[in-house]
Image (cartoon, rainbow, N blue to C red):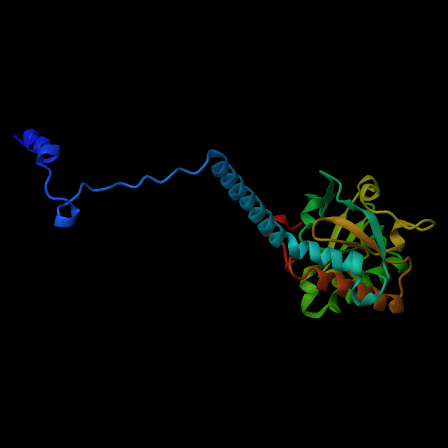
Length: 251
């Protein structure tokens, strides 16, 4: 039987010649020691730590363009110059749930303006000489941005219910004109000390934060300085800000 054969094969009585006669020897097995449990845990912790650092590095890479653009403008200040406009600190976000109205009375969300740089003026509907000057400068400043102008919207927030003069309607073809009540305006924008809200132009970033105010009663020579500020903002944000906004968000 196979059992007896195996027994005989490994019996000392039937052992064959020694190694010097070339007899086969039983197969030897080498047992390696297992790693110490502490070493294994340390290796696992190193692996987890490496994974966390890799994830952090990935997040930093994704956020780098936004961080760099704001750092460049607010800290380094491109070209070594101070801005002509006054930087607002802290910036003011659009009022939550604020509503405005189209000229036909349709209610709209103020935050529908987000997604573009905004150059904003505020004035009553009668639109006096200062109002007309601001509207003219808004249009000229936007056009002066050249191919980048599609990243900027010029907005007139009408602060009352008065009818707009008919003669300015053709000039407003490219403007966003909305009516906003005083509470909404006061919660978002503010004039410099000693000035009225309608005396300034205001810059709002694509996230809806009011971040700059140009000096009151801006004239054409001042507009040249304002143009440089706008160019710097567009250049600093070019890595993350694209022209246009989602269709459903348009006011």
